[in-house]
Amino acid sequence: NAGVTQTPKFRVLKTGQSMTLLCAQDMNHEYMYWYRQDPGMGLRLIHYSVGEGTTAKGEVPDGYNVSRLKKQNFLLGLESAAPSQTSVYFCASGSGELFFGEGSRLTVL
Amino acid sequence: GQSLEQPSEVTAVEGAIVQINCTYQTSGFYGLSWYQQHDGGAPTFLSYNALDGLEETGRFSSFLSRSDSYGYLLLQELQMKDSASYFCACGGSSNTGKLIFGQGTTLQVKP
Image 1 (cartoon, rainbow over the protein chains, first blue to last red):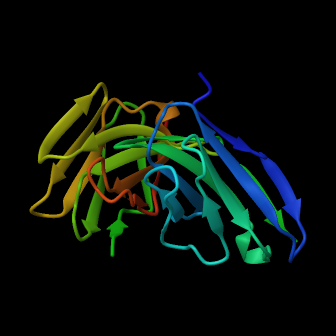
Image 2 (cartoon, helix red, strand yellow; image 1 turned 30 degrees about the horizontal axis):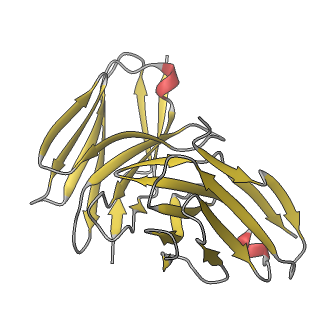
């Protein structure tokens, strides 16, 4: 049972490049989330989805886009990466109890 | 909007009891949950309170008072492995889906 899987786990980008983080869950959860975590800070909600085909903005959505074309997948896109987006990104799924992926460590130079 | 406040750091000795408080402000409250995160790891679920009162799970207990917009996580018989960050989060199974976390409390357990 894989749970929540994030790819890639590490990535280095140059300013202005684009990339997509993929989150996949095999627990048939309706709700999925993307958070970012910076040193000494908590988890800040970027975007979330309450079901296939739906997305909503969280606390810090600027500079990110998301898509939920399939129930099991939640994609986070950076169209033009900036150094301020250097962070650890966590995907989660569930309701009441969240299950987290292992994180994706992104560095933007 | 939603916001949660918790202390940034707590220190305790092995075998002791520690309480981590969390106060929240939110419209449409649907429950308070707690997560543990070790350095470099993913957050893991500890407990969830939808109703007032105490929920006990082994050495960990969580309390909620909706009238006071307040909750706490109680850790008993502290062990070195309990050194981690602890986050409260506001939201739940019946809300719009938006789950917001506090900034976390770093617990250091000393021998």
